[in-house]
Image (cartoon, rainbow, N blue to C red):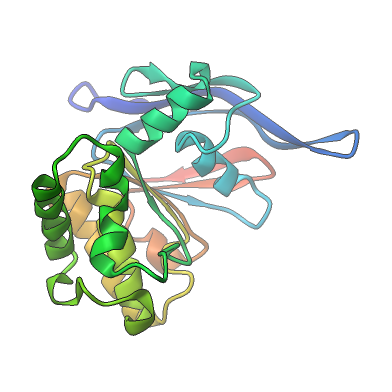
Length: 233
C-alpha cells in the first residue's frame, strides 16, 4: 500500500529475502518481501510460528542482515552498513521491547533504563534527566530504585519500554511484548504503547500472536511461509 502524499515513508523494504543454513541445505525464511511503513505508524506483524515475522523484525532493527534486497530507514540503506556502522545505527535509532524484558537483575530500574545512554556523550546530569523523564512516561518514577525481582511482570515490561524510549529512537520494535503477561498487565502495556504512538508520534513495529494486541495497531500485516499474504488497515 503506497503512502499518501501527506505521509512520509520512514521504512522502505524492497524485495528482501533471507534464508538460513541447515547443514548444506538453505532454508528460505523470507522471499521477496516489499512494503513501506510511514512515520508515526503502528504496525503489527502476525503469522504462525515459522512464518518469518520475527526474522523480518530483526532485519528492520538491524539485528540481522538481508541476503538480498534493501531496507531503507529514514534515508539510510542499512543493508549496506558494516557491523560497526550497524551497531552505531541501532544504538541511535532503534528501541527494543522484548517478550521477557531482558532486564539486568543486578541493576535497579533506573540503572537498566540508563544503560543505552552510557554509549552516548551525555553528562551524568543529562542522563539522569533523560532516565527520569522516561520512567515518568511509564509511571514508574516511584520504582526507580527497585530491582527487577521486586517488580511485577507488567512493571518490568514498563521499565523495558522506558529503556527503549530513553534515547528517543526513530523506531520502536516490539517482539511479543505482552506474551509473558496476564491479561490485565498486557492491556496496560498495550495502552502505554498506544499512547507512545498517538501522543509522542512513535513509529512502532510489533510482532504478536495475540489478536487483541494486534487490534491496537493501525495496520496488520500477515506473513505465511515467508510471504506477505494480506493487509488489514
